[in-house]
Image 1 (cartoon, rainbow, N blue to C red):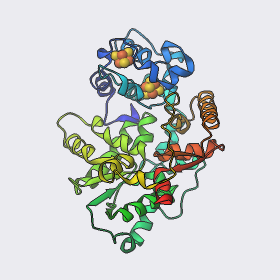
Image 2 (image 1 turned 180 degrees about the horizontal axis):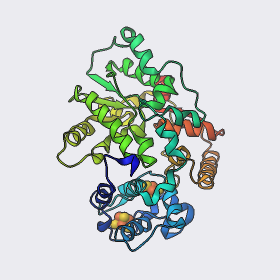
Image 3 (image 1 turned 120 degrees about the vertical axis):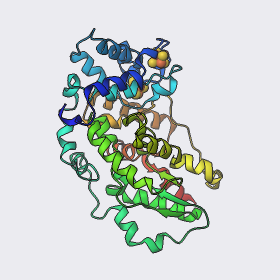
Image 4 (image 1 turned 90 degrees about the vertical axis):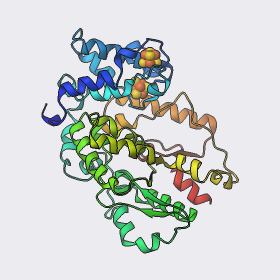
Length: 364
Ligand code: SF4
Ligand code: SF4
């Protein structure tokens, strides 16, 4: 397959079997109750269990994928809620992403892949951002950081933190990255952004282009190799969770896999970082009345938005969020994910969308 010259179709099939664990499914159905697409369609083929059974039948050559199969795969939000719920460690979300790399499923990404591939040698998917109508900042956060390094590196009472801004914060919402930095400064950390960082690979993984994702990740690993044992902070949940799965893209025993596994242990999403290193921070906001997000809306579906898939399902999810916001009379909706932030800001006008770092910076 052209776009996966360094990962063969056979490699992908093995990954589905071994990493995805299609043979481990005991059909218990625990995954269905947390799956947003099953909630939407109420049909077994739209559940993680149903999709895993389809994947197994496909790998055993008992099934030729048709339109219905493509439709059920295209409505997987890649939220991976099913993977947390599964008692036998099946990974339906990852199986669905891997399948997209096989020729039988190419139709699923025929619109998005050419856009992404325009930027194969860029550090970030600029063409995708433009297609989404995002205004790209004339100066990235990273450039601004280097220009004002003296101003920003005045902390230092606590440990040095390596910051991975992620490409949405870096190029579209630099003010969100700026809030994170400012907060870390207030807490006394020294901040470092190593030179040469690239996109974490998430959009390429969603769109079925593991080859480009792997190339980007390899470059990031070379950069992070020099920061071994340092805490890596990522204030975009999507980047942080992708970083935790980087090792899945490399063969057993490879240098890259070992490096990625070591890195995953040092990488924190912002809220986990604060819980571990500054646990009292939330008690400093006197009027904060935070509600845990509704379990019945586990994902807003931004990954589908990125790939322009299932507009009806996205519309339905947004209506549910709107209803929940109205019922609970919410003033702010806080997110830790840069793509959620962008998606909700563009598509939800009933509530103010803010990032976790903005909330903390404005109140401390
Ligand atoms: S990744 Fe999310 S949407 Fe996809 S099957 Fe799992 S729970 Fe359902
Ligand atoms: S929770 Fe796991 S074992 Fe149970 S049906 Fe879902 S994928 Fe299969």
